[in-house]
Length: 186
Image (tube, rainbow, N blue to C red; front, side, top):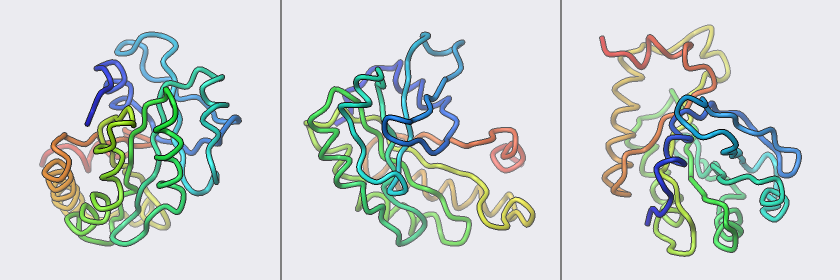
């Protein structure tokens, strides 16, 4: 059940993905044209270990996007714990999937929906829309996949996730200009 207001949704839309750590988290500063000054959030994954939601709250963090899955099979080892912590917090939680260019979008969506379902179904979690993190990894920046393949698989992912959770997922990227040719229609 999605409960958070439009401001937080807009924040997530303009979110430039980065990896942040608990109290030491760098703050996401969204485009202030779209979002009131002072709205802050972080992006976390198993690489940071357990997240201290009380510390985030003291830092006036209003939302957390937590990695749920990656590719067709990986499930983030901290996601369930993060959901549990979020349910006891005033901080809104969104689940994200790290998109792989090496497996079908529909398969990745199945992995994500199975793992992230709790974050949008649990009434104790102030849930944000699900998101997909699209960024180059490994040699993909030097050897990018064909744009039409990325668009096809990303579209399959987005449609399957929307069907599973009832809400259009957000797409966020580290370097939006780096994906302009991939994301724009041919």
